[in-house]
Length: 77
Image 1 (cartoon, rainbow, N blue to C red):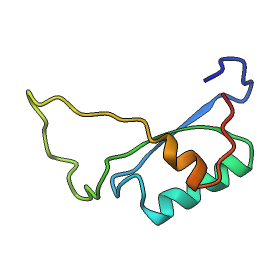
Image 2 (image 1 turned 60 degrees about the horizontal axis):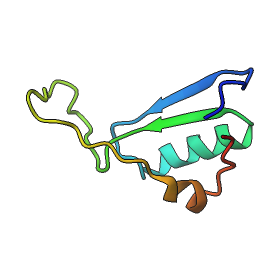
Image 3 (image 1 turned 90 degrees about the vertical axis):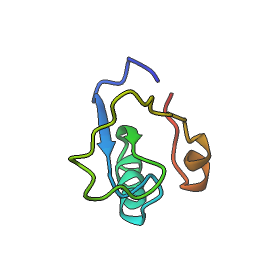
Image 4 (image 1 turned 180 degrees about the vertical axis):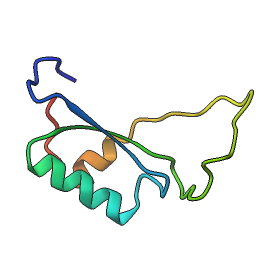
């Protein structure tokens, strides 16, 4: 990711899962408008889990580069 982008970055989060249709549409619209985006969401729907605590269990993070192509995003790195 380039630090030279003058408009800053937008961090998008979602509890409905990374592949939720509304989340995909928002990512695509912001990308089409030229915004730099970081999308962070669980692999599956976690709605209404805001009070859940995760103590002592590491979170597994993985980059989903496959979505850049399948969602037709312009990767500005």
